[in-house]
Length: 187
Image 1 (tube, rainbow, N blue to C red):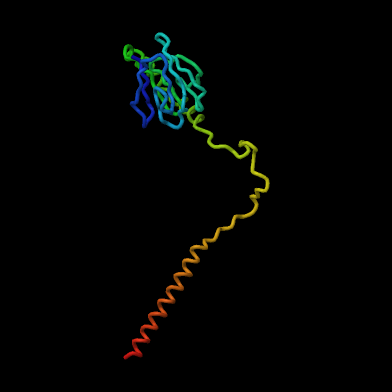
Image 2: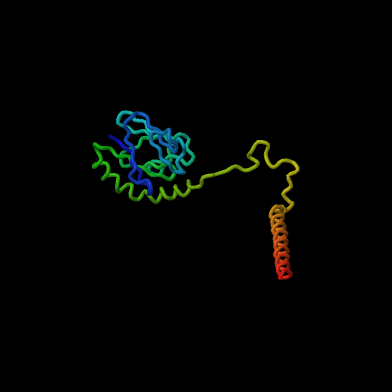
């Protein structure tokens, strides 16, 4: 039975057996093979079993789908080849011919990591956020002046608290002094 095995550090060893004709791979839970990693799109690609061929079809993912370092939209994945979804690398393994293809492509894939790394660096930029001009209505509303400095708001309740503490303190001191003076005169 064919299966995809994750090679990327932190997810190493996770695998998914391809036992149905149509498998979706992505970051969210409704995929048959969920890979919860930020560079993987929510619905990244699908794996189609067509006879003995394993076909990978990109689902307009943000960071692309690559086989042995080449970006694809739809392509056959062969045993021993590296599939990269965003920053996550996987390898196709088959139970029947695992020893023959695994030994032959190994030298061919050994030099491949350096080009893959270069392309990985190129695809690491993930745009995030939106600028104000992209929003509906574009820009800031009229009358929104950014040239004025913002002043710090005063915490008036804190000031009133300390004034109250001071007044209560003075009253206590006056009462203590009055009590002491009454004791002295009473002797």
